Length: 215
Image 1 (cartoon, rainbow, N blue to C red):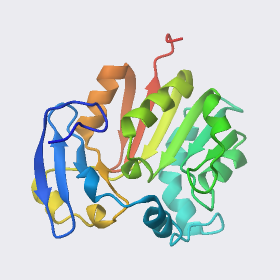
Image 2: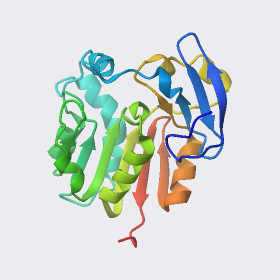
Image 3: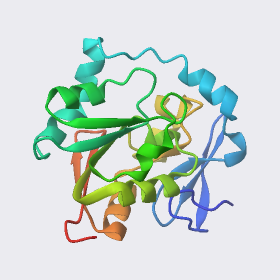
Image 4: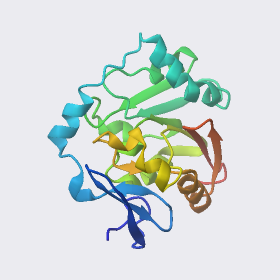
């Protein structure tokens, strides 16, 4: 068995196998993850991302992102500073938030790889359809929390695991770049562990707030 890539627990078990990959689940945080040996190498992963055609002029894409942008904007103080983590080759959410009066830095491991932005402090961090791609989610999660100001917001979009039966027929797991899968229980585990306020919006939007009394 493997260590959980999110919480580092050794208590993991086989969850599901399909014709492509094997999946395991952490007994502590309930994360489902792909066998690390079956993940893509960097070159093949990048080739998959290059197929994405999202751009800021696509109204359908903007409508999709508004499912996170709209509730997040209601919570942000005016002129907040944020980071869009994993923005991809055509940053769009950052433009939508900027149009609402906020300032947004960009980071993407392949398309905006300036790690200097990861050393700053932010009022909010967004990451849409990114968290399921992370090979080291525990490290990234800690990095996000360290980069958030007390009282700051973390806004995420990702599809959630329901159960093994639903997972077996789930198209979301078939993307070869999707290697970890969160559930409501996973976010509840993280919120309790890290003293975060947690809110689920619809089926794939998650808002978490860092405690305002943390330094």
